[in-house]
Image (cartoon, rainbow, N blue to C red; front, side, top):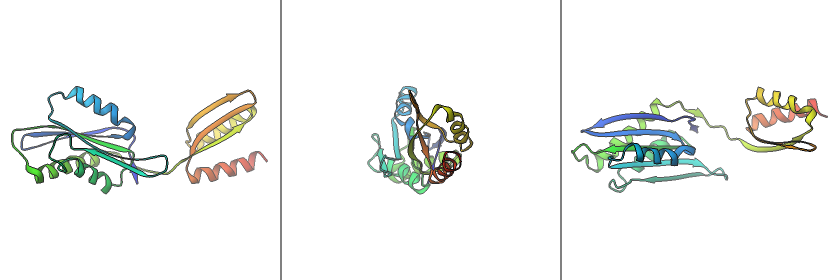
Length: 189
């Protein structure tokens, strides 16, 4: 599976209809959708689809044809996301009608093409499952943990400074967790 960590945009024109496609991390979906509505008040449609992993590691999907004929626009977007094995992403397409009807088949091809082209521009990153890990340390060894976690490029989800030490909340892949356990055993028996 793959994901992205920034927004990508692409524009195509088919029979005078303009398709402006945005591929964005799922966390940006609502704000980008609102922004596109403001930036493109005269567009006929803003079609979208998304896929993300929920807290139970299940893929959640949703889509909207936004007034286009049912099944002609959002399903092709979602199918391209599935085919490219993308997760935690949303794709939105602003369409300006060009005066020539494309028909159901033409819409399916146009929306599918717009999705493929924006994904071809995107930088896809391999998805590695990470799980939350919580632990506590004394203040005297905080620097050692910061250095070690920085060497793994682990970011701190949260740190709480308590009277008797620091409570850490981090996200670790299975490989990072194994290195963390070895680090603990070596340094703090």
